[in-house]
Structures are given as C-alpha cells and as structure tokens.
Length: 197
Image (spheres, rainbow, N blue to C red):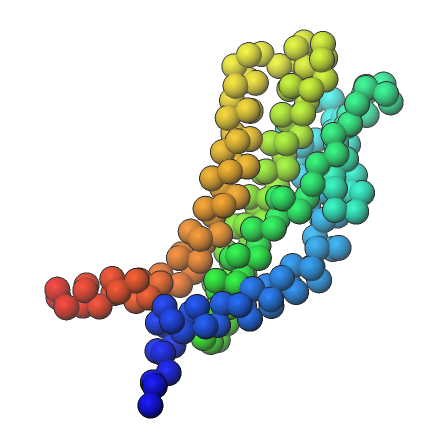
C-alpha cells in the first residue's frame, strides 16, 4: 500500500500544482479587468509626479496600455504596450503559494497579500520604466533634446532589469519570503539545520 506524500513534500507540492495553476489563472483572469485600469492610473500619477510639465498620458485599451504625451502633436506617436507581460507573473506566484496545503490558513493570507502588494509595486515600476524608455528613445528629436546619454543608459538598464530578472525571479523570491520555513523544509534544509543544533 502506497503512502500519501507529506503535506510539504516535493511530491505533494507537484501533485497539487496543476490545480493551483488553474486556480491562480482563474484569479488572474477575474482580477485583470479591474487591475489593468488601476495599474495604468497609478503609473500615470507616479509619472506625472516625477516630471515637469505633467504631460504623461497613459490609457487602457483592453489588455494594452497606450502611452503618449499631451504636450506633443497628436501624430507624434504612441506606444501600445501589453499589460499582460507586466502582471502575468502573478500566476506563478499564486500557484506556488496555493500549492502548499493550507497556505492561506492562519497568517498565510496576510503573507500572500503582502507579497502580492510588493508584486503590484513592481508592476508600477515596470510600466513606469516602459513609459520613460519610450520618451527617452522613441520620440526622435524630442527624446534627444530632453534626455542625455547617461539618462538613456540608466533608463534602458533599469527597464531591462525590470523586464527580465524582476519579472521572472520576483514571484519565486516572494514565495520563499512568504513561506521561508515551508520552502526550506521542502528543500530539506530545515531538517539539516535542526540536526546540526
């Protein structure tokens, strides 16, 4: 007779992961129609706080953000940027959390909510850097007149940092931060620490 895997074993986690992915996907799809306008609104507010004149305009078009400036000609160009690629990392984060048995019990929901808040802040920074990169690189003579080479280098580097490492690594890091004891036990590191003491 086969034994059921421990609650925090790798086998148990892998067994629950497909259902957790479906649940996380469902949450993401349900929240997305409300989250997209909120993300755009907050990012536009932050962008306008950091600039003079306050001319950044970001609107929502389905699952895209339309980025432009109100102080340029109407035909000066706009950027259509996918919001899905910014906030899809919510799915793996929630899936990993929900794959733990009883992950939301006790104070678990607070840890998940706090980590989700940090993820949301990273989404604002990611969209803000897309806005700044569009202004610094894609508006021709206007960009050259308003951004130095150093500013362009810094904005470009920060944009790629948020596009790749932050987008893909942050969900995993937040999962570990939300459940450090359980993740360490899952990896077999907690047992080694206790054995050494």
